Amino acid sequence: MNKLTAAITGVQGYVPEDILSNEDLAKIVDTTDEWITTRTGIKERRILRNGASSDMAVKAVEGLLKKTNTDAMDIDLVVLATVTPDYPFPSTANVLCDKVGMKNAWGFDLIAACSGFIYALSTAAQFIETGKYKKVIVVGVDKMTSILDYQDRTTCVIFGDGAGAVLLEPNTEGLGVQDFILKSDGSGREFLVQPAGGSANPPSIQTVEQRLHYVKQEGKQVFKFAVTNMAEVSAEIMEKNNLTSDDVDWLVPHQANLRIIDATASRMGLPKEKVMINIEKYGNTTAGTLPLCLWDYEKQLKKGDNLVLSAFGGGFTWGAVYLKWAYNS
Ligand code: UT7
Image (tube, rainbow, N blue to C red; front, side, top):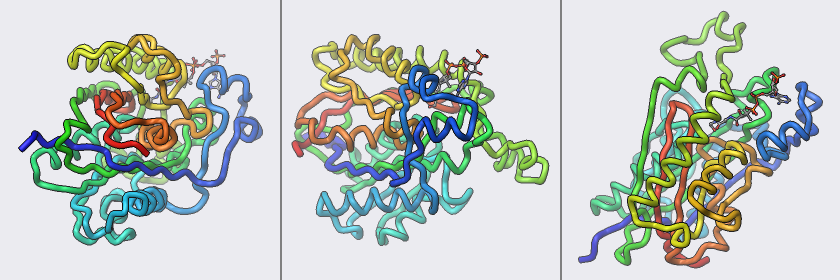
């Protein structure tokens, strides 16, 4: 029997209907459309007014099951990446399985901030490659607005809400996940962190008064690490797999900042036409960015295309996945 690989056989995204534009934000904090557009590339983002992360994940997964003609009862495992779970526990994966009726699946959440989807995809792929499971769903979802401080113009303009999900199935044609490089450096936690709500700083009147339940980011520091490491790891996975820039059909980059995306594409020697970009309409949806890109560009993808997925985020966490697309839409 040929070697088993884990192939993406379907992708579905979900973004809430409500749009928060740069102009809307300029009415709330001291900012301008010009500043946000030139510094980040973002024009608008989606906002989930009511509901939790699991509700967005439900929409993405229900759509995924429908379009791939898959019975919810046939799903073996759900790996869900998020930093905005419904609850500290139980996991959002458990909530999702219940809401969608994936009664035969087990699942767990994985925290790797903006690298969540590539961490989750690489983890989930192992269960397919060993032959243990036949149908695994990987979800990247974040309701970033639940942890954004709308008094902090340096963070509230960047993030948005959204979810994406892919179905992973065994492949014997050599398609799907080929390789991954994942990295982390916990000393970066001081630059990008939600300080309170965990065991280090349990919720108290003081933590609320000090606004410690919101995302805190030292943007300049994070930018410095992101721009270097995302570009480096993307080049590294190309070299490791003997891929030239001609061999790579698509870069699927985390959507944090257009300048970071441009630097990564440039380091890989890729023209803009090969780079998936949707930051202008969704902003940074943390674990949601990569599956939302795949969803937006699905129709342009062809069986056998070489994709490099690449991300950098809180932790610090970063990495890249090399995969061969497995189907024509
Ligand atoms: O996805 C997870 C990983 N995160 C990232 O990759 C984010 C990485 N960082 C970034 O993308 C950028 O650092 C930001 C977009 C967050 C900020 O852009 P920047 O070019 O690094 O700006 P800055 O923080 O150096 O601030 C420049 C100026 C400051 O004013 P002064 O001190 O020069 O007078 C800020 O106060 O821009 C000011 N500023 C703003 N002005 C208008 C900061 N935020 C805003 C704002 N509107 N929203």
